[in-house]
Length: 390
Ligand code: GLT
Ligand code: MN
Ligand code: MN
Image (cartoon, rainbow, N blue to C red; front, side, top):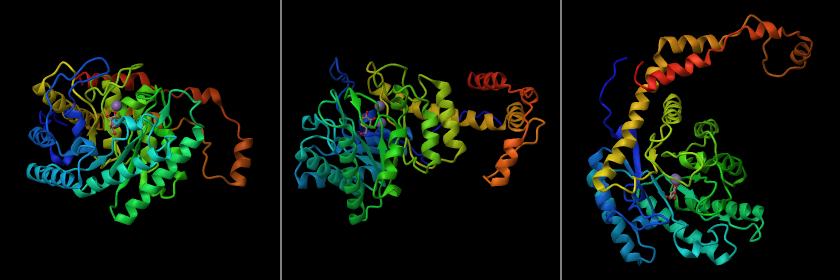
């Protein structure tokens, strides 16, 4: 396989960015904005210029929270036209249920029934916007669905409320004929001290309890799973295997820190490689969404460097994955480690006779131990490849 220098993003790669990602103005908990406001239409043309395929948005990234119906219609229409003119699609839409102070105690799980009703209304309206723009994926990130003190409500009541809300939204999706899929995004903490659905695995356990489980999957985010100290690719693999990988938030994160949303692959290159390799190996066909933002030190030229970097790193790692899969020495080791030793015992599906036989079989553990597992060599070959000397 030849190494090409063509790491140019194209529509077929399905790279998308949220309006809030490249539009991030660098405000944090300690300091104010460092970059000027960019309108959604300016962001769309920036994304088109860089070769992205899609743009995602929260309702209020586009339409101010108190806009009138007429204002909303006009904004959505002109945004739709800007996307069409630039050849940018809107694969995913979402709703902000975390920014406005009314959600200080949560949205779907808040103790006040009026807040819960408002959260549903706001979400249905956000779905309307998404549908108008052609989005088929609707992400739900419950940033405020959590606690500082567990004195405030029983945690299982919160789960029940969340279930009722998602069931309600599924019915709305059906009634309107939107054909959307919901993708639930987990995070262990921040902005709440503890968020109820802390990990992708927790959502995978929750989904089968819904009225329309087929309509609901997950949106795992690199940074969020890492904040919980977990192996992100393993979470993605479990979601994939369950048919629930409806969307993905790519970024990066250093261990034991607040949510950093760093440029994809900028912190843990090797983990990013295994992730890209997994997505490509299984032919994941969904969007590759970068939920990240540029360093606070950057201006808008730097934001472009950031966005280009996310896509470029993905494409380089994708090429490395293909090379890895075709490498003769690697293939040899993979073959060696998946073949069996000299023994003959095998397990098929359970049968009474098979189990009886297995119970009496004598295993030669010393013989089994003779089989080599050269994972050090395998990993070093991977490292050589990532470092560009192989
Ligand atoms: C917010 C959060 C992200 C979510 C977005 C969707 S908004 O920026 O940090 O992880 O994916 O609501
Ligand atoms: Mn995210
Ligand atoms: Mn994040």
